[in-house]
Length: 541
Ligand code: PEP
Ligand code: MG
Image (cartoon, rainbow, N blue to C red; front, side, top):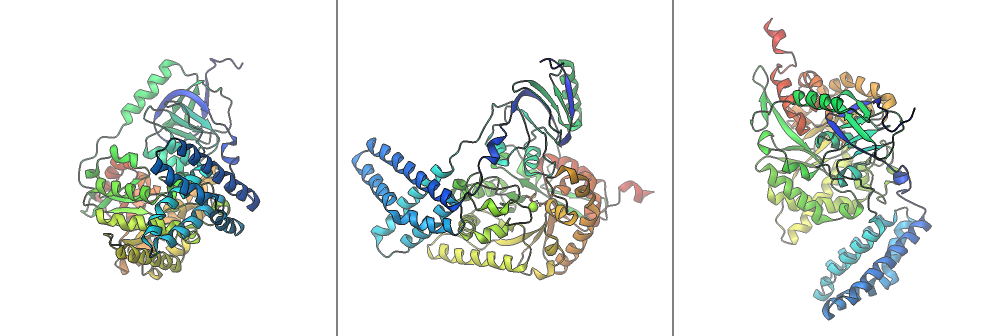
């Protein structure tokens, strides 16, 4: 019987613990696939022409509502857009394989840089107008409103994009149930850091939009049309399991034999600054920036980057803040950002994509360099495989630093370190002499070592079973880093899992970046162990 009040239970896997009760928001499944990141050059050209036309129409409407002076400025912008030169420059890049948005931004940035270098003061002053034009057309190209849903409801669907998660207001509660998905996916990580209950891998099930749902995430259980007693029972179980507040010890804890372990925070979203106490952490060990830039408009907005980095440094005070450069590609793509070739985890991802799109790398480098004036900023490079990549990015920082210094901007060179998440790099840390520090990214290291994709639940067991191999690889890497006298730590999810802590200590790690809501558990796990990973009790016997 398929009656509306029929109670049904579906079993999945817990991706983020907690209990949520709400009405179902059933995802529209075409959303992600209907927006291919790159089209054919002909389609991209057409898309660009339409966006330019839309921008001109917007400007004309604005002229009608403006005073004489403003109208003059807007008229100038309209003239620029009507001039085919700008569009033709972008079209050349489209023919070379860029998506419409990237081609437009890259062409305009090149043009803007030329204007900024002009000796004529009047011409230089026009640069701001061109920036405005660039952003207006970019907005028309990418300004699709995401399919948001009512606060407090439970998202049910095949998968959920990180950008949609970030655009949603979770303050009213709610949860996530995915037919597919994986506990190692980025959206799962975001859910854990925001304490949004989430269940994955339920398999497809029938449920009506608007039905009432209980998400008992710790148990991996979804209940359709739950009884009140069932909801009360799940909520009281959750309240009992809540960990005690960790002591405020500035982010260090000693093992049973007195070895200090540093605990830094992983930050995925600036909203977290409002709810996390900085005195509990030794700063930020990993700040992911790709989640902060949910559209190409954001990704290419230097001021937005700069403001967020400043905010992080303000939050951390005297403690270090390690900001990771954009790790786009894999499951973290931006429409139109050349993501076409980088769908694969093995493709154009992380530093590979940044070096293939140097406009973006330079923009982020500038924002990071400017932010060094506000605290102890370090830069972390994602997906480094060979030393040449590190050298190329260091050169970009040096060049951008020189430009900023010439302009009189207060800045300095930050320490630049690398993620260790590709086995070819993990085995050869001694070759990366330019890296100021190393951070093991076990989420990716596991998938590349076990040849088991982190977002494929059919191989989730293999992904998990790679833990001993990872720890052996880490131990070798720690020995190399120690010999180089370079700090080494871990920022993968393994460090937020108490069951892995003994092996990670035994591998020699002393710097852990953890998900803030796992801090109490990790502190108590470390406090019960010797620095070689053996438990207090066993030594005493
Ligand atoms: C990792 O790979 O362990 C990591 C921290 O990076 P991300 O999960 O963002 O790929
Ligand atoms: Mg990674």
